[in-house]
View 1: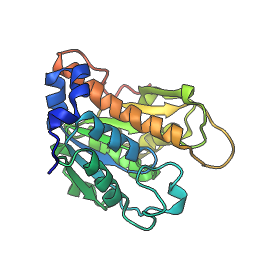
View 2: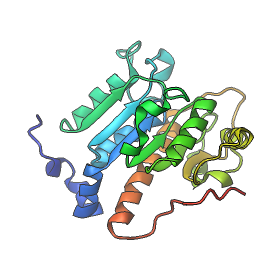
View 3: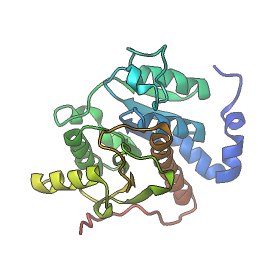
View 4: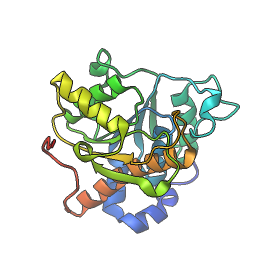
Length: 246
């Protein structure tokens, strides 16, 4: 048990957001699918913002090639579970947080096991195209507010990172591939959703840099905080409710 209380740790956040929004951040239940270069920084930002109920989903182990961009990746964590390593880091920020580490793969077969309706917010930071498409379908059919990351690879300019409606994202190969896959499957999302993307492509290989992946992750966390903040004041949010594809 920490010698510091929630109010001690998040005093500055409460000054910015107000007590009602801060208490709501403490109450909400968030799930992040994929805790690599994007999802790991999103998780840290959420916990540093006061989120206490967080589920981390990722079946992968830390590899040496992850060290340049993933929060949990160090020379000491190579070969270990990503979710368990990240959980340990997050509990050093807020030891009272309830962090669930699920070393499982989300796919069409395992999807029912996750009980998505128990979450208030779902964050997609999955790499696999088919699994990402499945999560989009399932998450938008749930009661949760859903935010998604498009591709963060092959980018260097932080000024070209944006937030937008999934169906209106342009100059993002992953977004285009997802829209095509969803349309061809005949199983569209229940409603549209906001996503983080960038309209820059450099080089030919899918390399990625920490300042880009971290901005993607921090922005996703920011969308959750902004949503909670606005709802606490009864303000409208930017979350679309119709599947408003072009």
